[in-house]
Image (cartoon, rainbow, N blue to C red; front, side, top):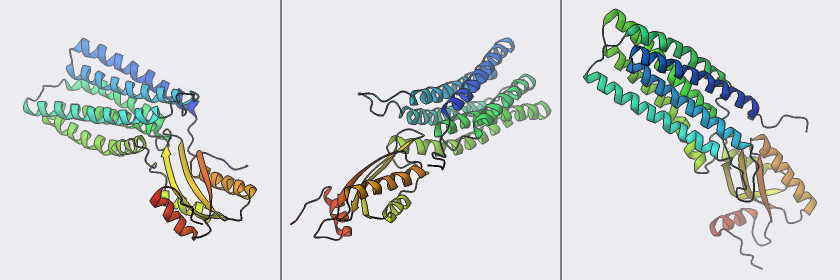
Length: 314
C-alpha cells in the first residue's frame, strides 16, 4: 500500500534519545542545586533539588516504559510488557499531583510564618531552572499529544519551569518590595496551573488502565464506518482498548450476508482491518457470523447483544 500508516507513531529510538538527553540535563541541574544549596545553606534550593529529582524519576519511568515496549511477547505475557506505558503515565500523573500537594502544604506554612528569602541566590538558580526545564519541555512539545507518557514528561517540565518562573518573579519582587507573601501567592497560582494540566493526563491514563476506549477514538463513528463496508449487515460485541499508550486493539463480531463465500468474507475482513488501521487501531480480531435465516440482521444483532450468544431456531 502506498499511503502512510500509523500517523501517530512515535519513533522509539528518537524518543529514547530525547528522554536520555532530558535525564542527563536535569540530573546535572539537581547536582548544581544541591551543591549551591549546601554552600549557601539555602533550604529552598535543596527542596527544589528534591523536586527536580522527581522529574528525573518521571523521565526515567517514561524511558523504561518505552524500552519495555520493544520486548517481544512470550508464553506468559502474550502482549509483552506494553501496558507498563499506561501504568507509567498513571504514576506520573499521581506524582505531579503529589508535588502539587507538597507545594501547597509548604506555601500554607510560609503564609503563617513568612521566610526571609535571599532574593538574589534563589533568583539566579531558578533562572537556570527556567532554562533547563524550558529546554527539556521544548524537546517534548512536538510529541506531547501523541503519547500520554510524553505528555506526562512535558507536564513535569512545564510545572517545574513555572515554579522557577514563580521563584524568579517573587525573588525580584521581594528584592524591591520586601512583600514576602508574594512567594505564597505565586505558589498558589502555580498549583492551579499544574492541576489544570495534570487532570487530562490522569483521566486518560485511568481510562486506558481500565481498558476504556482511548479518548482520541470515536467508537460510534467507527461502528458506522464498519457497517458501511459492502457485505457487512451489522457489527456487535465490540471491544476497543489500548494495549499501550501507542497501540490499540479491537475485537468484534461481523454479521454478513448468508450467500457470501469464504473468499468474500476474507476480503470483507481485510477491508475492515484496513479501515481500522487508519483509525490508529493496529490489533484487530474479527469473528464472522452469517445472517440467521429466520430474522432480519437487526433482530439478530439485538438477540446476540442480550443473550451474549446465538440461539439457532429452525
